[in-house]
Amino acid sequence: MVAKQEVVIDGETLTIRDVVRVARNKVPVRLSGNNDVRINRSREYVDKLLADKKVVYGLTTGFGKFSDTYISSGDSKILQLNLIRSHACGIGDPFPEEVVRAVMLLRINALSLGYSGIRLSVIETMIDMLNKDVVPVIPEKGSLGASGDLAPLAHLVLVLIGEGEACFQGKRMDGGKAMSLAGIAPITLEAKEGLALINGTQVMTAVGAIACFDAVNLARWADCAAALTCEALLAIRDAFDSETHEIRPHKGQQLVARNLRQLTLGSQLMTRQGERRVQDPYSLRCIPQVHGASRDVLAYVADKIQIEINSATDNPLIFIDQDRVISGGNFHGQPIALAMDFLAICISELANISERRIERLVNPHLNEKLPPFLAKYGGIHSGFMIAQYAAASLVSENKSLAYPASVDSIPSSGNQEDHVSMGTIAARKAKQIIGNAYAVTAIELLCAAQAVDFRDAKQLGAGTSWIYAKCREHVPFLEHDRVLSHDFNKISDVLKASAAAEELETILSIQ
Image 1 (tube, rainbow, N blue to C red):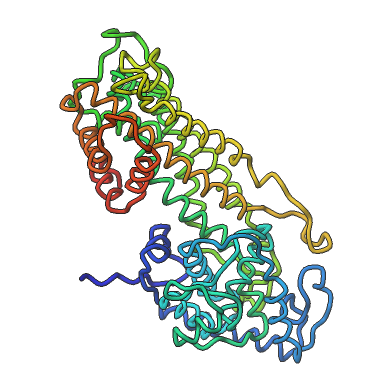
Image 2: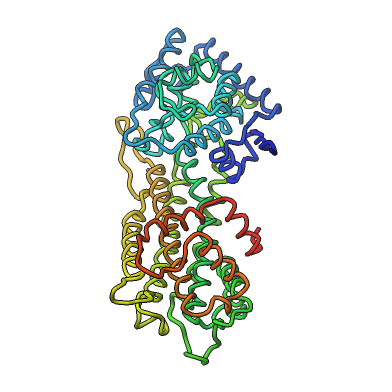
């Protein structure tokens, strides 16, 4: 068995794919040796500030509205411990373990930059937790997205100090017990370390990184579902020819048009303009424009996440060479909040247009003489009638979820923190929308495969033949009515699977 290649953490070169590998596939991590000096120098500077009794936020002062309250050096440890306990106010169901693992990775990466004044041993303990799969239980709700993800990150730190709850070897247990079973000694927080561990955007960014990865994969499958539907509905290929897209050169639009041409290459089901009709409906003719616009959004979102996962988002930040400690606002989640709201909207649109194609496939007035609701024995059987209902329900739910979280702000901490991002809410909603959109795409694929069976699967194009075969590998033709939710779940799982995603990359020649 080939060993998993490790991910090296240096604070600067982590990628979204790396995050997913560590979060999902449990690839081990290690800290780059080049970071040790910066981390140690930063910590030495904190100790000097403490010895000199300098007034520094979070080091010798309270937090938030208590920033003007001086704390003596003798109370600095209890200040940090109280910070973690008081801020652990998370509510609701816990985040999935893959999300928490991503959070841990991103927090380690941010701290490794050496601007936070934390001890190297603390970072090494977090790496040990990640590699031994001690996963803190972090409730999903309770973050305002500024000053970072305070509440959820506090639950992570509880386990680091031997408190809270964690999952270890498939069991949820006391955090201290999990650390003991894993052979990891909990830490005792020193000055500034509690604040350094919870002041950042790593929760919203972790959810966002995984969501973005899944959304990019979904966008590729959306092109596949659309291509198969086009063949099932005898669509006009002229709308996808390169000439149209070269004179409106949005990158996403051109990419999707190219995918559709490639997937349907050699098809005997696609038609030419005027052969059967002059124009197709928008849900077919405008696939490059609609899917393509979402592709451009995904590129924007990925860029923002890529920047954020390699950023220092603590406060205050320590600049040793300038002999300065700056209280700023890098913890504010607005860049991620806006990106997540945009992600939610763009994936909602992929599901919206998919549902419209599903309707065309099942509607006897629109489906080019296919059987009503794709039922072989219509009347006694309902076929895919209610499949369209299910898709419509998910699409409607997405429309509600797509309302932007970032436009809301509620003042906190006695109005000291008077504008917040709600970025973690935005990320969580985007994740839900992506899950719904996978299901809608799975429904379209099965409807399209059913429709193709009423045509002739041998007449499919090169790429659509592969897509059709992938569907039929897991779900048979609907001869008689059966429980379809199982079929939808099977195909949705296939779409999410890494093996199928890698095979699809080869089919589409997408880098």
